Length: 197
Image 1 (cartoon, rainbow, N blue to C red):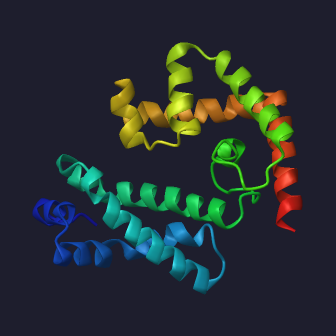
Image 2 (image 1 turned 45 degrees about the horizontal axis):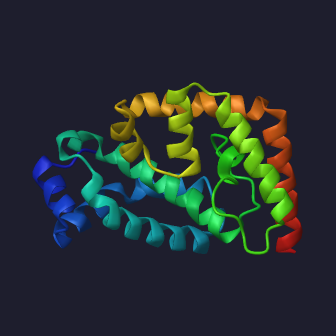
């Protein structure tokens, strides 16, 4: 479904009526995204509330020149927010879908993390990044280490969002093949499992 550009502009400006129209038009799309991550109806509804709040907070970052892509933007935002919520509720849980669990541990460590394991993980990440050519290293640092969205990474690097998606996929494949990084991530996840219990 595509909403009129005028509605999208009003949504971006924060008008309540336009936001309600966006919610009505795209709730089913976001429900399908959320269903990929939670089985419980209660958890899905809580996630939906969090996601719509996040959408409202991020609305100004949407480019109204691409109003026909609003559904894709919302689905991507919902997916990333769902992953954030899963990490927050259980940092040791493996993430589904496209392998983002591989580098999910690069975010802020849980309280009480073992300093030796954190150092090992930091060294493994640095060694992985050091083998990348400068443009790929910059993308790795901005997207995976700093956690920036494509909308921020693309202009910072002077590349398209499509190129960002391609670089992410390539780096995830390379990360999975890096034994030292995988071993460090595995130890961090094992520590997280033990800490959670």
